[in-house]
Amino acid sequence: MLEGSQGCDLDLNHSGDYPYVTSRNVSTTQLLADSGISSERLLQTIMVIRPFPIRISNITKSDEYIYSGNYGDGEELTWTQINIAAMYGSYPHRGYVECFPHHLKRKRLKKIITHCPEVGLKQVFGENYRSKSLDTITLLEALELERLMYKSRGLPEYETKLIEIPMVDSDFPPNTIFDQSEQTTVTKMERRVFDLDIKKLKTNCQINTPSSLYLNFFQHLDLDYKGEKGNFEDYYFHKYLREYFSWLESETNVEISALGTGPKNGDRILKKTLVKMIQKG
Image (tube, rainbow, N blue to C red; front, side, top):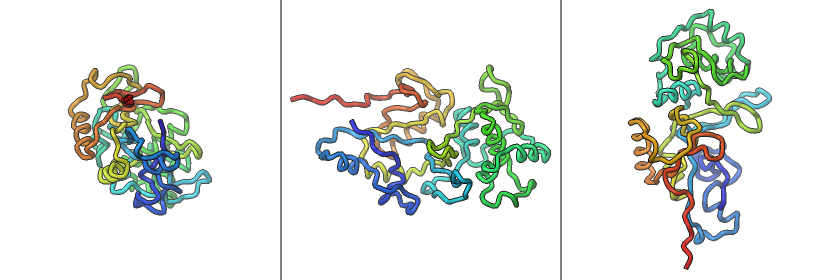
């Protein structure tokens, strides 16, 4: 069993994002070649994907502003959009947060900006963050700053003061948001996140010919499944998720084999057997 380097989306030859690519090719055939194994001996390939692809931060560890590329035609999202949509099992489309009653007051904005780390301001507003006017800050930008403010205090669960959201868990106060944002292992900088470019995924499937798809970070689509373990047939998935599964499988012509639901071993919902048994003659 071989686990390949991640990042076929950043493949040196096939990603289409040069120079924002890896330093080598990342594919099934390249992994086999590197391992000295003939492609004739390949039994199956499990392709691990995410509902919302990621890129590294546009800000370095030394706070320099760089450009780290996009994700094909996938629109760049914010972790706020994903966090709130996942709480209600919906998709983080453009304008999603504006549907909630909100209170975007200058006094509150000033307080958030004052307590938000400089790297957070740069992350939301870009390199020229100092020239940003209070009157031009959108609700989504304000929510992102609020999230980064609480994150800098080590609070992945916090009560937003900017919007009113329905209760999703009686164990938490009203307007509680659960932050699912991620950081890179080495630099500890927050990753950028994008909508899925299905054309890019289909290209990756053509390159790697996967036997099945392992949909990791499934909890980003619905927070109720975070840390869940079990078999696919034991769960009832609501219409939005069933349509998502059907769309993904029909577009790629590849079956989903498992849903990754968390960082621990066994945090997954199994749809089919992952490892095929070798038929002995």
